[in-house]
Image (cartoon, rainbow, N blue to C red; front, top):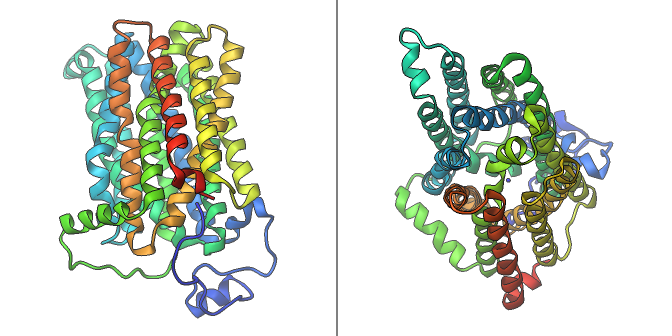
Length: 447
């Protein structure tokens, strides 16, 4: 996964001199006397700094695991189809579990829920390291892992997807609790920046770590990286939340959809998010295939391709953070999305590594502009009491459909070249974006 949310001002006591005074007054998002530059203004809050830095270190490990997992699957199967299957297994829980995660996020302490889900992902990373370590051994009980390694990877990816789909709504909904409402756009942009900086460092480090230690080393380092975010979550402070337990889970979930039904602009945004996630995002699953088979770039080449995409995304996030307010968001997200899909089409048909790096950079830059506009708008339009459920529906739309898209692309790749399959899907997304923009006045009016 950015604007000013509805609701009363967060600091009911007015401007205060510093964070300590704000803590004493009960405001956990105090405002220091000396403001930081606009591009990093949200980092003036100590709680958000902890949250940001802990997630940054953890995300580096996650990207190291992602690059190693795709490479491990190719070593096991040498099949684009199996890449699609693993992508499906790791992401399909978003389609079914994220909605429940949003309801739970509105009912329990978000920090405690995040600590549970992050701990579960840490254990799964260590388990995956064990699978990779014993894969090369063909004696004793390790033979079972050796013979069924790809199914172990699929099972771990599935359970990791469950944990992540429970984690995402709380993660999204916690950010507004850590910053002043005027800094929310900047905070979400900085979150995008740290995530995408990890896309630069993680794959680059992961590519070299695979060459030095093998894929098991990457999975182990990812497990260790979760200690950073767990430490940060244990230390942050924010106002106590008022939670209601009167409604049933299904009544709460139904209330979220009823709320969205009355919000025309959010309905359009969620529809466009679904187009992106089903027809565009799945290409990420196949980047290892392009690096190994189409570009013959090896492990380090795969890391550089992902790093270029991450660099473009970081610059896109910095652009959003520096502007503070994104104007004409409907126009920006539409044409940024078209640029995103065009870069995917070019990347899927490139046989030159330098050109692929440039296209990956363009994909990252345009993609983060589009996603930031989605996130800013939905956070801004959502009410405080519905934010967990709204963000769970957004998460389901954004992260729940890529597994179906990856499965479709993997199946198409059995009949036509993989690059052609992804190009066909991206071209369909371009037509969808143009059509929605042409007929939807709520989208054109979004500012």
